[in-house]
Length: 99
Image 1 (cartoon, rainbow, N blue to C red):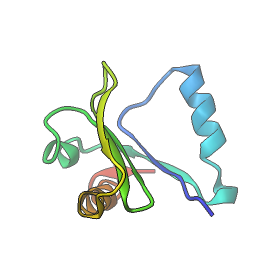
Image 2: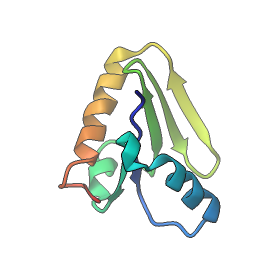
Image 3: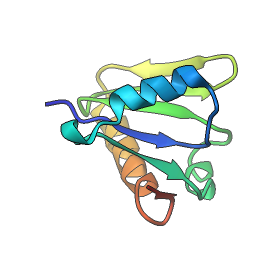
Image 4: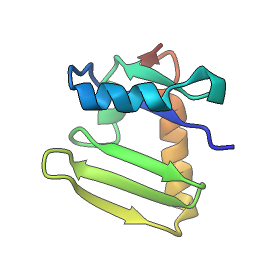
C-alpha cells in the first residue's frame, strides 16, 4: 500500500491543485494533509521555500527554486533521506502544522 502525506505551506485557490488534492487526500486510503503554520520549522533547514519528496527511504527530490522549478535529486542516498524523513516528521508535528 502507498500512503500519501501532503504538507501544504499555504492555501490555494488554484482549481487544478484543489482537484489533485481531492484525488489524493482520501481517508479510505489513509492519506491526509496538514497545513504548515510555523514557517520557522522549515527555514531552519532551507534558506527559502522548498518543495521536497522522499521515495522508498532511498530517493529524494528537493525543489530549491519553486518559481523556476529547479531541483536536485538522488536515487541512492539513504543518509540524506533519513535526514529528510526526520525533518518531515517534525513538520507534521503539532509544533509546525495542523489539520
